[in-house]
Length: 250
Image (cartoon, rainbow, N blue to C red; front, side, top):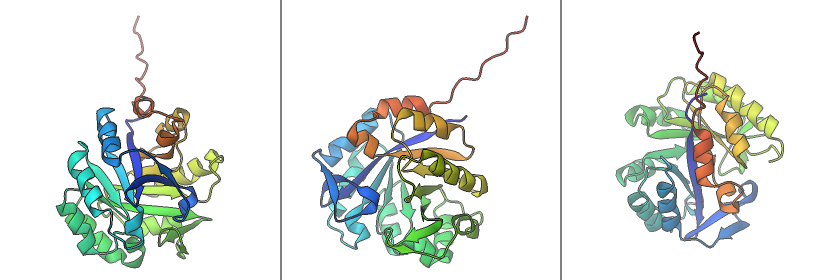
């Protein structure tokens, strides 16, 4: 097992930290915390990256722009940013503002050629998001199912130098970790870029299991941190590689 990067994950809507059940934008659970202070807390706990999704931007509303900019500039760790990255202009705007990486979902399904080109122009800064529902890749913030089978979809991007591929199994019941790990490991085998697991971590044990799957470079951990079923310190600790036992020569 190798070192896994834990991405403490923050989702914002109307200036608040939220979590959504199965991506339903209309029923957020609102957490009464200060987003910038929470992001600084991620850095203070020793995280190397954080992941930020702007749900307003998914709807084409840029009201969180100032807050997102503050987090990028003030969090003290690089930000992997997603939400509404529907054009080259939008992606380059956020790279210019200092986002460490940009997560691209719908645009990749609509214009794979452009996204491959952006990955080459910005190596290690573009992350492909693959949201899977009932064996199909979903786009449009989970509202539209494309006729793509996930492995073929990932293969279609060839060896574009993505910083990572985030795989989310939207459909598996959160209790069915086996099915989720099965999907993620089968895609990780085929992907050229390192895979980042999303939606799988509820407790430390889930991180331990991910560590043993090849080509999984990390995991997004959000809801579990806000619900306090896992602390960021525990998550980071569990993600460390296990020292290999050293044979004693006698």
